[in-house]
Image 1 (cartoon, rainbow, N blue to C red):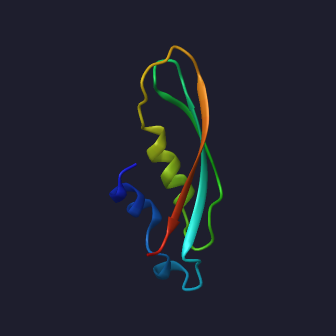
Image 2: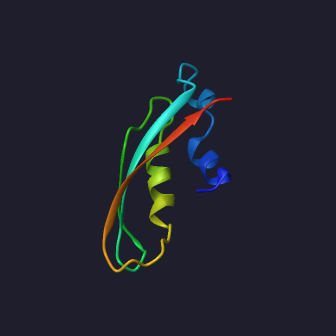
Image 3: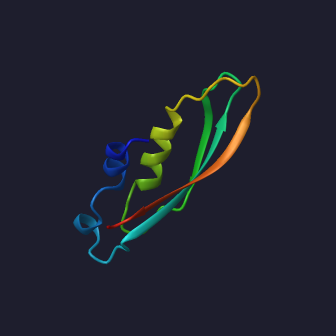
Length: 84
């Protein structure tokens, strides 16, 4: 995911919830089929103050393409956003 895509999904919490935390974490479980296509994406953790963050990340990850391996692989990837 590019920085621009992450920023779009992350949004500005101050616009929706002035008490939103300054960091957010979403864990994404990605299943990649043997051809390298993402076949399934699930997310956990939709942080308070960031409506749609988990769904936005999941939708973008579902479009990713990986090298073909001939087998199915499942990985968990944490996305952590923090204000700087």
